[in-house]
Image (cartoon, rainbow, N blue to C red; front, side, top):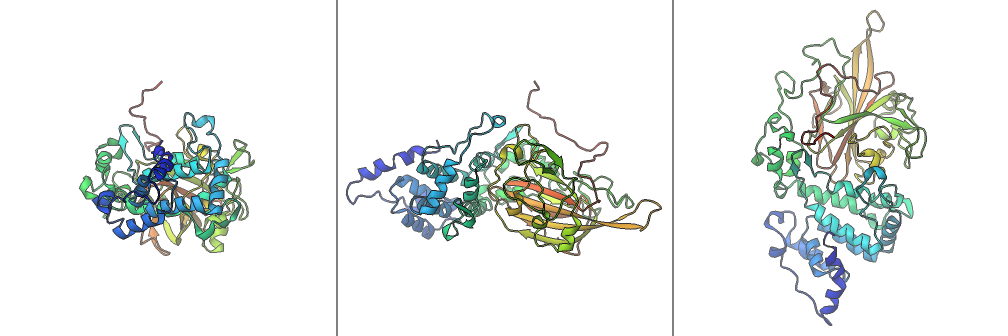
Length: 491
């Protein structure tokens, strides 16, 4: 139970010390591994122990684990505030009371957050994130555990508005307001976890991934473990690129511009992903009737209606209103990236960047995990709720496309727009735009790199302006449409 016994023994340990007794603190050099000391100074370690000194509900062993963790600042704050701050404690209790069972489609998974008391939930969250903070993804044959901690976390806020509000730093009793003192545990945890994944301490499992055939390391210029300085450095690795011919040898673009300049109507996948049309809900009841996003999108209507409406106007950040207006009545596609695949995203069209920004936001709190990552392994399938990504950290890159009109029709050239919206999901969830992706930049389909994700869930949403393209995937002879489940015996 993730060292829960340490918590259960806390009261006994405290009582056995006697009046005025105390266990001697574990020395910094013993508690903090050498590889972690660039992340945790002795001063920070001592300060965390001091913060936890008055906490009697957990053992000295647990306090040492927290103080020595790369995520110790966020976890110590969670523990202290969860025990002493009435508003935060009430928020935890509301989240606990709102926990629901996993749906039948998710079985045999269970909701590990369904516990008996507020303290049970608090202690479990502390212990879970202590383990998660330093967990490094592993890969073996046809599977990996990149979702080991990300997946179960979703049940914390699955169909649970109080859990969702708490995870996003909002007061569950008044979700329009932040928790007191701008307490936002999950955000602070993701920042610290990101620093760990950026450090040399996070390189231990990279040799596994390089050795595994699914990584296809031959497609990259850096092919040895020592070529990478951190897990995130490996995660965001860039494919081998032929700059002279403007192509990526292992990912040949459909009819590249240099060979087929007249075929300016082609749209290509922005990355290695699982792609589905965006849809719009006709009913707020889960599993109700749905329809494709081909139906008109209005500035004040949602992509998919659930709990927090998201409009095209909001989704496109601070883009000028005239650009936003171009997408009214448009269509779109979602692209979900898997842990073992390429985590950079490229331009899907030839054109000119007219807007580029990163919109800061949360990376936690999506409350319909069962549809986002279903058991049939078709993530963001029809039925997925896209109404919640308004508050997520995301990039917004809008590309102006000038293309030839049909033969004999005037004007000779038409103009449309494509919005590439990379969304960071869960944990670090970073969205990084390439430095040269600025207004005025020319982009080439299947070649120009727009940016990358760091470790965590990753999604690239494509929106097409009204009349520009259908919201369906149209492929060509010889293009990949799937991957065989190597290592799985067919039934």
